[in-house]
View 1 (spheres, rainbow, N blue to C red):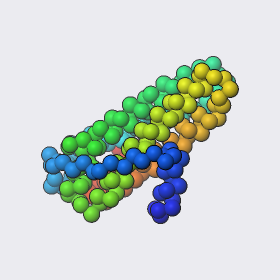
View 2: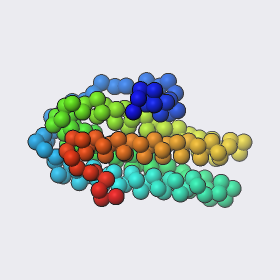
View 3: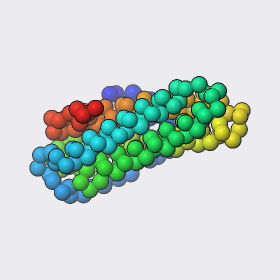
View 4: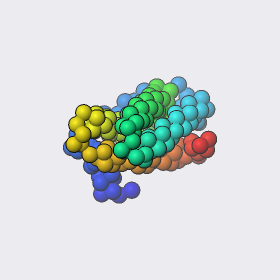
Length: 181
């Protein structure tokens, strides 16, 4: 992906917010080869995130004039945020895949840092979607289309993020993390 494409992809949710933080380097519990327990946990959270994304897409795709639409979108956003938090906590944790990759395949450190940065940006994007939802709920003049756009853009970015993560794990360990999907 070119720098211009990457910049374009991030502009919508970052909106000038500097979320860069220095990398956290910790010794992983297992550095030789792929830690199978870490892979199993990562797959679980990878799949949980996919299921939450499917729920959010279904909710936002419903008719916005239906009385329960906004409530359904809110529930799906809460589930999506929890799944994203769980995913981040797992893969960035002390025994997570990202730390293992940093030690077992140091040449992939730039890709690991991209994923970490995306994690922060994705959390910001979920929070923004939740804020838009609250605005729609409290003021009928707010347009539901804006909420739909925020959620569908978020879902697209999450899809790209999951794909980038799968590519990274495959590059590091020659294992398809999405195989259980």
